[in-house]
Image (cartoon, rainbow, N blue to C red):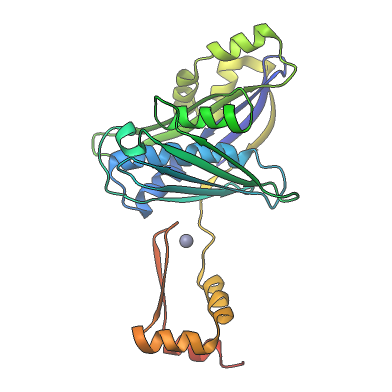
Length: 280
Ligand SMILES: [Zn+2]
């Protein structure tokens, strides 16, 4: 499903990104067995990073975020790439409380963006004095990337705590945008836009809100997908060396590796070591 739309609106003076991240947030909540409240905060962060991944330029581009704050959720990490494969973790998946209680009042965002053809860009900002996830990202765009940005994420849950909709809407005036357009950007109703995306999909919602003046330049699919695999970890173990691998198996019974991005456990036993090093 094409769930990420990027378009130029308001006489091509403003870039719009509208994404339905429901499937990504649902999968993140399922893999990490999140409480409803943790799913909201983690889901908003995943949605924000889906937007930032959609902005990557090079085909091999990657971006990662680390959030360290005093909230009940603990550390949050999210990574994405140009293919829009998203993954992440929240340190305390069982956290409950308000968005601010889980996200924290004091803390920082650090973003490492690698567009795939230059040295990675590292940006950081402290949490602003007030607000939750959206306010922290707005602060990040303002301070670190010097881009005026209207930004809103949403995660809606039902009475059982299941995620029913998640999304992100972003408006960024281009450098040559005139005063009137900037004012229109600031007055645009992003909540209504996200409600529209929930009801009719990103494409129809954007058309309804901005009419035919919009020029779509990208419609893509984003999903929750970790890049770990047994094959990849096997290569890591080979580089560790046979002696070391066998030593760990001897003392612990197996080499156990946990991927915190997708909450998967891998186990490598004596038989795996025999097979891996058979041809060495
Ligand atoms: Zn993984």
